[in-house]
Length: 75
Ligand code: 9UX
Image: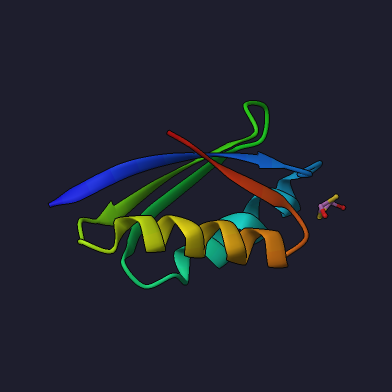
């Protein structure tokens, strides 16, 4: 079972930014798929369903923020 979660990602200005954000999110345990759209400034993340879903969302925000961008969960 998986869940799709969307984030607003601020601060990306080129395709390399997009790849950088995708890579750091991909490394989070429990993440199955990541797709970042530069124009929409959004990331769509497919996560394995878990009872720690909110913690996973917080972790994704933190790794993106630590990479120099700003992620905000779109709930
Ligand atoms: Mo492109 Mo993004 O030269 O930080 S990688 S702007």
